[in-house]
Image 1: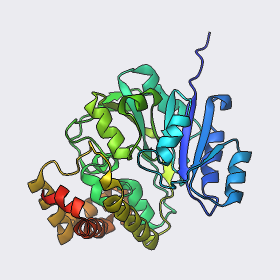
Image 2: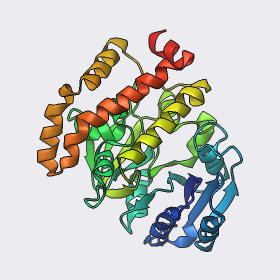
Image 3: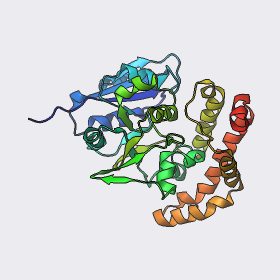
Image 4: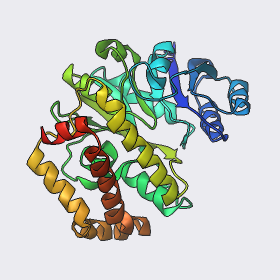
Length: 327
C-alpha cells in the first residue's frame, strides 16, 4: 500500500500591485503532487483587490495582515505559519516561481528519509534573459553584503564547505555560533519546529534559534530550482536594498535576537574594508565570469561596494546598530 503524501503548506506574505504572484501559484498547481495535499496561504498587507481575486480563483486562502510587514514576530510569515496545517511549510515569496513540476517531490525526499534534517533548501535558477542585476543576485542571493554568511553566497564562493552527498541532495550542518543566513525563497521546513522557537521572526533569526536548539542538519537540492524575479534592474535593486536596510536598522533591530551578524569584529571590519576598496573582489569576479560565461559576475565588486556602503550608512544613523557594531 502506497504511503500517504504529507500535506505541504506554502506561505506567501505580500503587498502586490501587479500579478507577479500568479506565476508562483500556477507553478505550484503544476506540481506532480496531489493537489489536495497542497495548501496555499497568502498573508496580504494591502494588495490590488484584482490580484487577490485571481489568487482565490487558483485556490489560495487569503488573510489580511494589518501590520503589513512580512518579517518579525506576529508579522506576515509568522501569521501564515501558525495558520498552516501542513507537515512541511514552504516560505514562498510572491516573486519566486518553482522551475520543476517535481519540485515538491524532490524537496520532501530528504525530510522524509532523514528525521534529523530540519529543512530542505532549493538553489536559485539563473535565467539568462534576466537583467544583469537579477542574474548576479541569482548567484549570490538578494544581499551581496551578506555573502560571508548567506547560504547562496557560501555555496558559490566558499569551496571549503563540508557536504555529505546523498541520492539527489547533499547534507550540510549549521555552526551554532555562526549559522548560515537562509530561510526564504522556497525554504521548506518541518512545521512542528515553530513550536520549539516560539515564533518566526526574521528568516535568519529562525535559523539561529533552531541551531541553538540543536537542529543543525539541512539538505540542499541542486536540481530543485526556484526562479527569484527579485529585481527588474539596478534601480529596482537600489530601492529594495534601501528599504530593507532602513527597516532593519529602525524596526528589526528592536527585536530580541539570537542571530549575531558580527562574531569576530577584526575579521568583520577587514571584510567591510575590502568590500569598500572594490579591488579585492576583482579576481573572484573574473574567475566566476569565465566559469559561468556570464558578464554579470564582472559587476560583483561594485555590488559588494554598494551593498556594504548602504549597510555602513544606515548603521551610522542608528544608535542601536552602532552599539551592536562597536559595543
